[in-house]
Image (cartoon, rainbow, N blue to C red; front, top):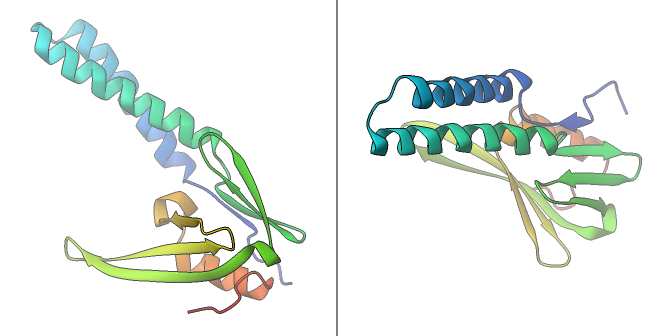
Length: 142
């Protein structure tokens, strides 16, 4: 294997930005907004952004190659997949709001489907598929 990236996760700058925006919204909800419904809405958005940033940070790296195991981390648990556990890895591509969106789909032998976006991986899913193919994790690449 060449000196290729072996772990992928959400971009650090994006997570820090979401957390900072959540803090600003929280401070604004407490100090600037005077009506109760506005405070509730902005406070809920602040808590949601902070929770998203914290849980996404906790799940880093989202996908990693460690020897003969592919490690997938979610918000609540970590899953280790061997080559025998993977039925298919493919890229799904579609248009959304005038942009081309790619998703990396990992279909496991126990009928679970793991779907990872560019945000989850921090890079184009095609680059991740290339790395997984090079390491032998992508049987039946489609």
